[in-house]
Length: 242
Image (cartoon, rainbow, N blue to C red; front, side, top):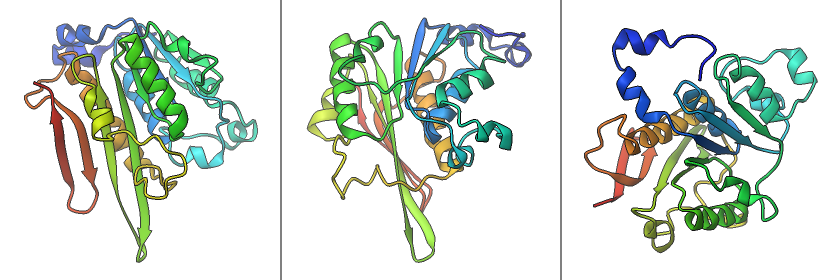
């Protein structure tokens, strides 16, 4: 899957473990701060194909909450996120597919056949449709969210990682583990403040959970819902799968 040999895994003697992530097709819906870091991490695995979905342009503010560094010349071109990120990560991973679109009712079936999907978008109503369809398709997925607020000249907030597989899905609906409203002012996971290190951490926690699901990492708790609170460095696991 790579344009050059993965000597890091061979040095660590974990090639056999790596093959547990040799899946057919992974989808990343939303390539903002968190989604771009998910791509950064997943592109370093043996996933055969990584499909990107986003209709936004890569603008100057995106450069400050995405991995790597963009040049002024690149930003002046205002490229679409999926094409910009594909150009960056295709230098390493051979099979990255850029879909310059938002997922909605007209194209949600494009997610059918994915082995796994990461949901990194903040549009609640669109997310509801996608979640319903992924459940219908029998597709496992992880949804991420982050709510950060400015209070008394410092930032505080919470990050969320919600997992759903055929083994456990009811918590998404009965416990409202994924916010689906675009207008709810009490939605603590849809505030607009984003910081690169928090985006990176949110993505990292999601990818670690994904790797647990496929046996790359040991998973003793089998949690399907986690939150990280900045104040107190508090990580909570709930909704364990029996």
